[in-house]
Amino acid sequence: MQDNSSHSRESVSTRDDPLGIDKLTIDYDYLLYKIKDYVQSIQLDTTELCKKQNEVMVNGIIENTIDKNISKFKQLLEKCDALENHYEMLNQLAMITDTFKERIAEAVNDYNELKKDANKPE
Image (cartoon, rainbow, N blue to C red):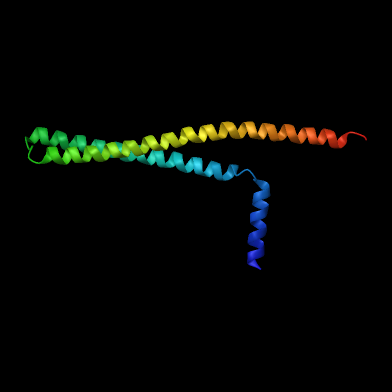
C-alpha cells in the first residue's frame, strides 16, 4: 500500500514540476555550496602555507620545506582547477536556463494558439 502512495506522490510531484525546475534549483544550490566549500578550502590551505613559509623565513629553517611547499602548492593548483570546472558548470547551467526560458515561452505560445483554436466556433 505504501508503494501506491509513493507512486502517487511521484506522479503528483511530476505533474507539479514536469520540467524539473525544483531539481535544477537544488542542483544549482548544491553546486554553489561546493564552489564556496572549495574556495574556503583553498583559502585555509593558502593561509596555512603562508604562515608556515613565514615561520621558515623567520626561523631560518629551510631544509626540505621547499619541496613540501611545492607539493602543497601543486595540490592548491589542482583545487583551483576543480573550482574552475565548477564555474564552467555554472556557465553551462546559465546556457541551459536561457534555452529553457525560450522553450517555456514557445510552449506557452503553442498552448495559447491551441486554446484560441479550441474556442473558435465551427
